[in-house]
Length: 370
Image 1: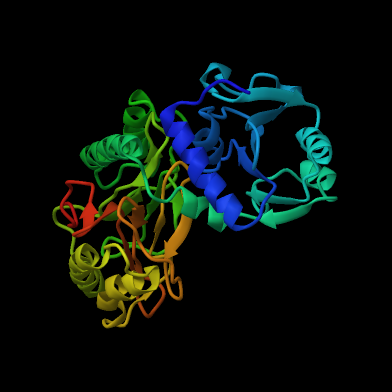
Image 2: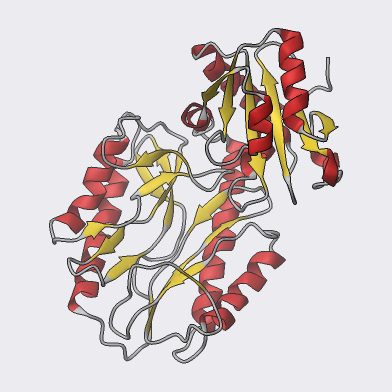
């Protein structure tokens, strides 16, 4: 038997093994790599944070879990943080395949089969019945523990202060790079490290266009900008909090003003709709109504579960019948786009589902900051 796990990791493994049992899995492979937002599943199941390369946590239905790393990069993070046995292999998939053969596994779930697992490892596992397990794994971790919620709230604290730093640094004529650099300095100082994915939406002095852009030095900011701020604090729980920003003398377009009215309606609708037992479909319909009734459409997913991976299931969207439960955390960000396809408004919030309804975790008023 391996080393005893912390109570929090025991809880996570128990939830995931329950999901495995429902789908008759002999084992589960949890994939992670250094791409921002895709490391978190490995940390969630092992305590280890990937700094570069990739890793797999292998969870047998019966037996101790372990984590496998590629040996061409022996030290891919702070290995002392891992609570599981750590193994190194030229091709990690080969080691997993050999152990699967010894144990007689046939049906193996994979989190990250389509987007994360390395092709060279997938090829060594082709003799197994590999089952995509992204949705099932995410649903098993969707309800956050008190320890996780403490980490989420700390990330929100860092994120919302980062928005305020961005706002303080903003002025028309400055570049997106120099304004975002001030916020990034705060994020790194607070322990986010590389776990930030921050962008801007810009356009004219009266409205923003829908495209997300990297904050580059050649992007000169005008009288209106929409920062998109997504970060994970030291506990590695991702959150998203941002507000639109306008120069004091900006004359915003009529569409922008009407979209802001719809945002105010969305806030009230989310408070009411985001309660246990309500389907993601019904939440989507409730929060998007103010936009669609004004003739706008949503160009980005309305919302999604968020945790140690930036985007998790379930999403808040059309036809998603998964029901909310108390303790789920969602990023909500209606991406309102005008009928001409040019005008947009985009602001982000992180929400907690409670027995009495949705609770926005940020204290920032839902307004256009001047």
